[in-house]
Image (cartoon, rainbow, N blue to C red):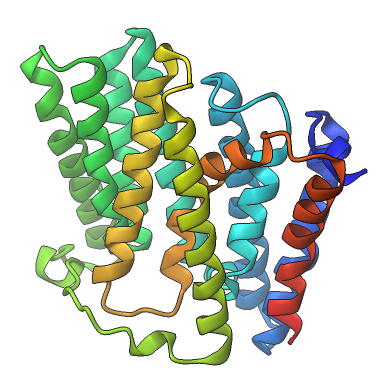
Length: 306
């Protein structure tokens, strides 16, 4: 029954998924024991709007570029992978940063049609720059913009300069903002965060369990994806390589960020959800398919409630 439901892509599917997201999102906030005040409510609503928008854009990316079949399997996996990371749900800055990273990824994938190439490269670079204002290390995804240029439009040398210009524009606008409000410059030295390979921030029960589940999913989904990769249509392979690159960049960022509390793993969710959809689209038989979906739906409740 669940497999039939998620195999369709209808408005009711997105409404039910959004309600499911809201329930888990609310539980995550409740578990954090936040005090109910104006600023917390604003962060709660703002974070949830960013979360839902990200889900919709993930679906748009997969459907528009034919990365998966016409279904809601990908967004269901995306919600599963984000809700097992409770700290990411209660961090509005991480949700906002992830939203702009996904928007940037959408622009990079749009380079394939060969139209408005320079404006799309600039748009992707601006999105990554804005994402880095919310969470500095998301600036690492500028690598994906260069990969997109390499795959789709490598011959025009001007294209390679545009991402740097995009980041400079974000820096200049940020300086204008800080000068207007705080009468000070946006200092690069204060903007850049150090690198750390310490993993002490994961040494708590929920963190270990979340990382364990995410590690198993990454290894399992990625292995199946690589096995099935050669069977994918040739025209979609550049897109798929970019998705793999996005996952690898996200994993690299998890390794080097200074403050680790599992919230930074939210960047893994989008590419891994697209990669994991390959597994859900395989013919396992009805019974096993239903078990898969029930596990993905119920496991976040176990992590958040126990």
